[in-house]
Amino acid sequence: MIELKIKAYLKPSCGWSNGVRAILGKYNLNYEDIDVINVEENYNEMVEKSGQPLSPCVEINGKMLADVSGDEVEEYLLKNNLVKPISIKLDVKTGAGCDHHLHEETVDLNQVKRRFF
Image 1 (cartoon, rainbow, N blue to C red):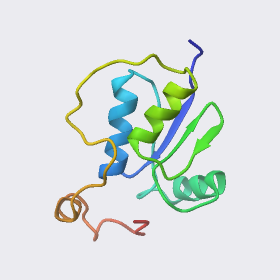
Image 2: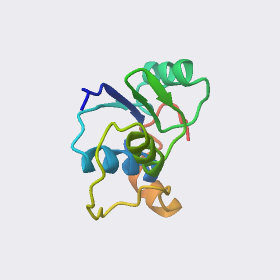
Image 3: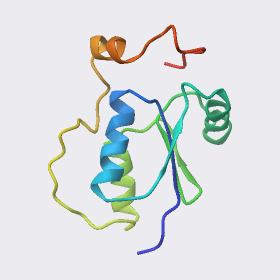
Image 4: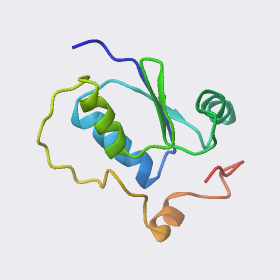
């Protein structure tokens, strides 16, 4: 297997972002978890690289996957033979956002300077 350089542009608390984290963890992949909510420079970098404002975005060896779910990241990794298929049951939904009430409970909007979601 080739070594993967992965930069994941994620929200600290989000169903989609947690799905991406779960897939990267499932395959025990090292990645840089880049906060696009609390660090404006990170958000701007994601938009510049992906050409669009939605997260999650995952850059794998220079290839940007824009506005993806964990399922889509896994599909890309498998299709390109970057990982071998494994069967592990995850406790996290990898293809869905979080419930609206859960999102409100986990994000203190008074602490967020700028909302990107």
